[in-house]
Length: 267
Image (cartoon, rainbow, N blue to C red; front, side):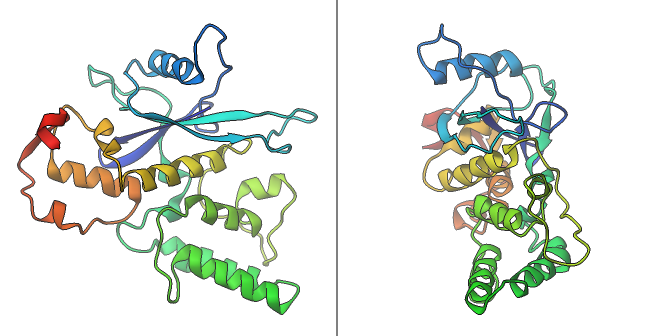
């Protein structure tokens, strides 16, 4: 299974199948010497573009991760970076903005209205609905940490933890499939496209990994065109992280200067 990320026109994109409902997946081909070699060939056949950086993400073996009765699916997931358009500039099918699935994760313009108007009130109800005082305190603390409230700062890497909190509170569609109902009145689900099986959880894992990775490895260059401005690079980093970048590394440079993906030009 692959979480394949690209950045197009300043927006982070992910390759999907089944009209955005699932992530690309396929069986391991015995003729390949490794899982990674099999993944690379599959991706390049699908996107008609060389796959850049690839790393193994996680193995998902949970008994209830498949919706098929009596079936246990074990998936080895990979995170890969590529570009949405092929060498002729033609867009490939199946790409979607990843904030379509996680609208609360894009805080480039500040906290989304969705958080204050819907998520925070629903989570407060969930906290109040805890059966005892200790659990109420625990839930309240988790909410504050996850969403950067009170004395806590927003941590863009907690994508999976935020999703799992909303799942536990019964606020996303996937919760309903597993019999988890919202404890608040009305039971309205949050905006954000759901995915089949546990694919939104896998996507959250990939987003979190990439947000952490771009802080200490130059993998973001895999997503850039052959030449780009420093401002384009800044916008790509901001798109992936979901936060506005105030780094002097970007602010002190001219946006008109052009850079190359060749290592000798940017190192």
